[in-house]
Length: 195
Image (tube, rainbow, N blue to C red; front, side):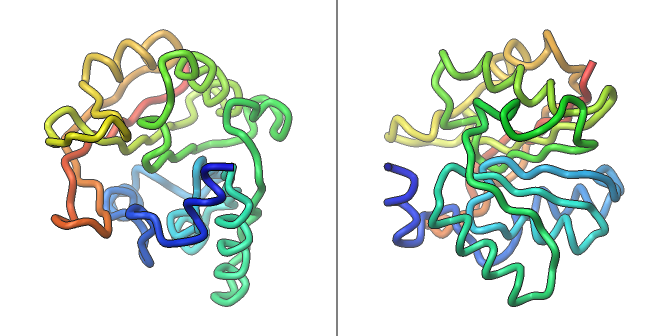
């Protein structure tokens, strides 16, 4: 499977620290203690940070290699996080409706195809409680790039995808930290609440 192969090495988004955009959300109080889900959690840095800030956290990823590394990292740091291997397009098989207060997405939505996006949006909506918050960090259309993936998204695309099921609080310029040079990529940070 593609994602498992990717995690046999160190993909460019696999930092040994959480994304600064999510750290800022905790520091500002936008993310408060509650039940949190990190989708596409990779090796777990963002999920572990959420747990350290008082959240009851689940991390989910398709890549078994990434999840086993994330579990080991959490044990090593004495942090409790529930890591599960699973497909975010089938979260209804794993979680109850309204199970989470917060869902974070660091670089997952921008790898979705046009066909997957509506399914993804419905799945995120379903697992969030009413008024629950979704925070998403993705490459923005301001980031130059000759590669097809990850897609660079416009504010309009993000709005049209999420606005039917979510109240968009903001879509603002942010940075996506990576191991590539330069280490900061132009990104959008979405804050949205479930209708």
